[in-house]
Amino acid sequence: MESLISLFVRSIFVDNMIFAFFLGMCSYLAVSKTVKTAVGLGLAVTFVLVVTLPVNYLLQTKVLAVEGILGVDLTFLSFILFIAVIAGIVQLVEMVVEKYAPALYSSLGIFLPLIAVNCAIMGASLFMQQRIGLDATDPKAITGLGSAFVYALGSGIGWFVAIVALAAVREKMAYSNVPAPLRGLGITFIVVGLMAMSFMCFSGLKL
Amino acid sequence: MSELFSKKNKEAFLNPLGSNNPVTVQVLGICSALAVTAQLEPAIVMGISVTVIVAMANVIISLLRKTIPNRIRIIVQLVVVASLVTIVSEILKAFAYDVSVQLSVYIGLIITNCILMGRLEAFAMQNGPWESLLDGIGNGLGYAKILIIVAFFRELLGSGSLFGYQIIPNCAYEAGYVNNGLMLLAPMALVIVGCIIWWQRAHNKDLQEK
Image (tube, rainbow over all chains, first blue to last red; front, side):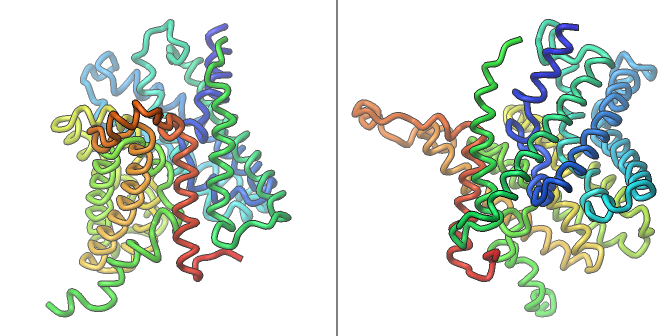
């Protein structure tokens, strides 16, 4: 239990998807103009992560690895299988959102189907693949389905926190006088850099 | 022959290197551009890998474009890209193991690199294989260019070396010069890309946002 809480807190603050690994930057920069859409995309990403990561964990350990049911090392196929799982689940989420939250659907626009190619989702699966082999005492290790779920939830919440924080800063920034060439994209990069610096103070965190 | 290098094709190749750069103007493929640029060598390997994969994927999708049903095109594109990335990743593991360890998950993440999906959707689905090849190489090189610029500054200021060879002379260190360790950490990559965008937009007023 202790290790699960530690993994959870670490994946939100220390191994934050945006500030430590830059994963999911494209949609992060494009959809963070208003807090409302940012919240929507953050929730969608968290949800897709929580669903796909445990599925990919089971695929990796039960099918692809040597110890799996096939008894052959198929890990070189992991890229194709992971992305197929992710694309399928995103399609499902898209249909559900279109049916039950059409306003959110139209405000997310092209970025909902693009969650399939959001690096944060694929990146979390690839990090999970790396972390399976780690020693069980390592705070980063993923030892079972439970910790895979907790890791997905933590990473998703970390991404959510990051995009909502940036959207809030950008809404305020509408009132500031930014030099013309820096306006829009340039200043956003620098703001994210400063936010990443402040998040680095968590890196010494021990639980 | 002259048709192969018509004005339109030249633009497809040259625009991504300058005024329509995938990273600084189209805002695609930022994730890996920031993560692999602490040193020059992995940045160059990454740039070459992406160029090869974008060019090949563009050609394959452009050859298939008339047979792909519209509804499942994203899945088809992803499968093509994922197979190419798997091949590149296996080649790197076999011939450049150290670099592939340094790049770790970011090679796999080429699959979700927005440059690929962006170019496949916006260009290869409408154009023939030759134009798509040029467009792919152009965008790949435009991406590699930004990677190399960022990696150059980060490695020079962060560890005082280029390609692992020391550039800042020892006498400078004796006189009290200290490497800026912050350059090697994640936040400075963002700030450097921000500054490149600043510089580019200061020179090209059309790109400025209101």
